[in-house]
Image (cartoon, rainbow, N blue to C red):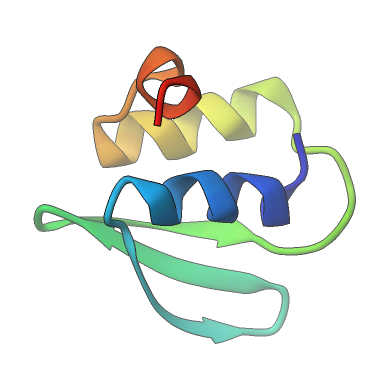
Length: 65
């Protein structure tokens, strides 16, 4: 999954993409925030799980939205 694909899925869960600088976008969900790298490169699994952990979102909840 690329950063752009992840942002698209996160926006379906009412995540607010606040601002970006360089190749990253800050996203906020229920007072939690993290940075998502943008672009077409595949995200490393550790990076993907860290982003989801920071936002308290599960992979399964993204798939069903």
